[in-house]
Image (cartoon, rainbow, N blue to C red; front, side, top):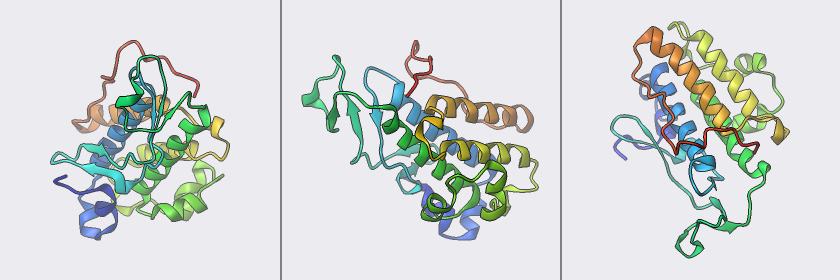
Length: 212
């Protein structure tokens, strides 16, 4: 992809990371949340990616995120799927803990985006921390502070905390995550002129929240 992957932008150089301002980071995280929501509950199949990270989030010329590295993905079997055409491992059903692995990994990506800390540090040190304690030991990226977005940054930190809860069934669904990020983006759109796309455009009629 023209702009490589998200990990390169966050960790290669300070100058490169500085170009990722808050509106652009929200655009990226919203796109990732939208993609995972569609994979989990967007059509006649349900896919768990299994290994979301900043390395597998590719960025096109407009910094729209694209997911890659589906080697560990699993696909829920339904009557509408011809298993002979699928490249994914087929399972009869995916229980809620399987979906919640993606939610946890999304939380790590979100926290990495906000702090520029490496994911292995975040996944080891952030479990069971309250949202109020995230900013202190981990330090939010200084580029994001003092630009008029501090309240929205803290809301995203709280969301990351919810996604990374130790008990899987205490984590939100990806649809709930998407709706939360979209609401935060909508506030910024009304106050800062962002061009972030806010509308769900995956298959209509599946907007109910599945308890996964």
